[in-house]
Every structure is written in C-alpha cells, then in structure tokens.
Amino acid sequence: MTHHFNGHINLLPVEEQQLRLGHLRAAMATARVDAILVSDIANIYYLTGRVFSGYVYVTAEEMPVVYFVKRPSGLEGDGVVYIRKPEQIAESLELAIPASIGLELDLLPFSMASRLAKVFGRDAASIANASPVLRAVRAIKTPLQQRMMRDSAIQQDYVYRQVPKLYREGMTDIELQIEIERALRRRGCLGQFRISGDSMELYMANILVGENADSPTPYDFAMGGAGLDPSLPVGACGEIIREGNSVMVDANGNFTGYMTDMTRTFTLGEIAPLAVKAHETSIEICRAVAAAARPGAEARHLYSLAESMAAEAGLAEYFMGHRQKAGFVGHGLGIEINELPVIAPRSRDIIAPGNTFALEPKFVIPGTGAVGIENTYIVGEDATEAITTTPQQLISLS
Image: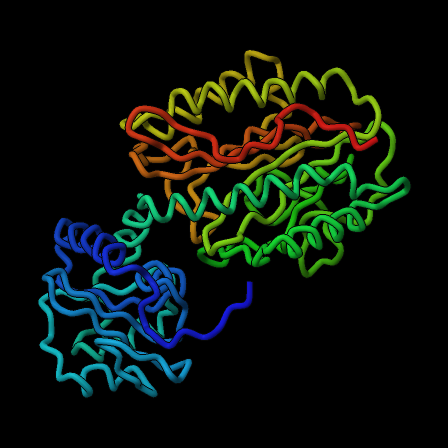
C-alpha cells in the first residue's frame, strides 16, 4: 500500500485521541503536574499518530492541546503553531505559566532541559519529571493499540513460518538473517526497533547460531552474539549453520508502528537432549507465567516463578544466558521495545488490564546454542493472551 502525506497534525480518530488524553490528564493530576511539554518522538506519536519535530503542550485541565512544529512543513489543524526555536513557545501564545511544568527528564539532555525550563521562567531543578507519567500511561494499551499489535503479530507469524524455506545448506547466520529480513520487509515490516534511551542497540533481527549465542554483549539482552563489527557487538557474526546447532530467530515485528516480539528456535539435525529439555522448559515457563499474569499480579513474583521453574528443572546455570545473564525475563512493548511492565527481580510494576508484554525465558546450552521461545501477550480483565502464534516447538530447518 502506498503511503501519501497527510497534512493533518492528528492522525488518530478523535475518540481515540480523547481517550489517550484522558488517561494522560488523569495521571498528570495524580502526579500533581499542571502541564507537560512533550518532545520525545515516541510520545508525540502516541499523542498524535504521527512523528514530527517539535513539541506537544498538554495541560491537566481540559484546555486545547497545542502543537509546536518545527518540521515538516505543511501540517495543519487546530492548535498548530510553527516555530523555529523553543523560545517562541511562550512568545507565540503568551502562555500562562503553569504552577508546575513537566518535561521528559529521563530522555532530554541537561542543556535542552535547562533551555526548555527557561521558556517557562524556571530553572531545571524546579521542573517535574514527566517521563514516569508518560511511561505509565503508555503501558496501558487502548483497544485500537491492541488491534495494531495483533495486526503486527499476524504478519510476523506469516514470515516466521517461511523460515525453513529460506534456509539453504551451507548458509551462515547472517545470510539467513538477510533472507528473513528481506521476507519481513516484503511483507510490510517497517524495519525499525524503536528503543527508549541509549542503552540498547539492534538492527532488524537477532539471529544466533551455536556457540555465538554465548558471546557476551554490552547490552542487557537475554541473548548475546559477537556481531559483525565492534560498532554493533550483538547478534549474527558470520557463523556457519552446522548439524547439531540451534538457530534462534528474534526478528522485527513492527508492521504498524506498534511492535510484537517473538522468538522461535530452529534446528539443523538433532540437538543435545539438554537443549531439548531446556526448550520444553521455556514453553512451560511461558504457559505458567502467562496464567499467573492476571491483573494485580506483581511483576517481580512472575520473574521469581520463571526463575524457580528453571532451577527446578536443573537449568539455572543456563537460564537467561550462560557466560553473561540478562537481568529480566520479560518486558513491556508497543511503540518501543522496552516499555512497562518490566518482569525482573526488583520490579515494582503491577500487571494491569491493557498491559502488553513480551516474555522470553531463554537458555544458552554450551555446544548447542540458544533455545527457548518468546511470545507477546495482551493482559485482559480475566486472562492473558499470547498473540504471537507460530508453533512453539523446535522447528527443523532440514
């Protein structure tokens, strides 16, 4: 489908935008923040359904939203004001200075936070941090957002089912990855892993073959990989896919602007019995944690459940890595790949209806490679549903 430029500032249905603004304003009132100035691209996309360079100004009271746009040109609609620099925000509208103003302090450089604070006659120390407010609001997906994630899951599933057909004897991990990425793009994948913060980097897919899965990386990923170059030390490294190897595929599921995350493990020939046991344990962990992930459940207790099941199976040494272990077993996702809730030992998150999260209890077995699965789940009022539906058992490439 060809995409053409739509010049309206808000691409969301009116009812959808009002729903999201209602959630945000309720959270602002709880946090005692009178107004926020949003500049992060992911948060702008959440509020408008599009990305632009500039700011969205939202008050806790139901005042009209103001969109301060730098680029692109041609955007129109109620509340659009074009500016060249942030100092024009107050100048343009003669805004009344709110009692408290929030900025995304988790994301803004100090210099920009200080500059924006001055727009409202403040110093950076007197500014509220709006990042936790926005993260909490975005953790609860509306029915429209859930549908967009389901649509991504359908397309991702289609490509994953083609993986055995993409394999050719003698392939390296990166050659298989390129074919998977090509299939994803042809299916409509946007190709982007949108990540909050600067602690994670990744291209379109993480394909791990054999011992490369045990290579430590600088990132807090469940799996590692040496990568092709020191500038991106994660994932495929040029390893040939050999008999007895596992091939873990964790590829991009962004088809709608909302991501799904799915991992499946493929094999070439027979793999070690310990690896088979670990893979089956991963499936069992996903089933048990999903059943326990009802509204009101504590995320840290879900992590403990996964960890204890791995230990009871005698697999603690290999759980969430071998030489280097990840500090979590699940993570929220949607517009970004690392949203709330976080399923980790010290997480304070409480599972709520509308949460969407990926669960990835993986294992690294020396001599074989990485095994296990990852599914994306939507939390309902009474049950948690996996929306990634590719068969979970080990899948043969031959």
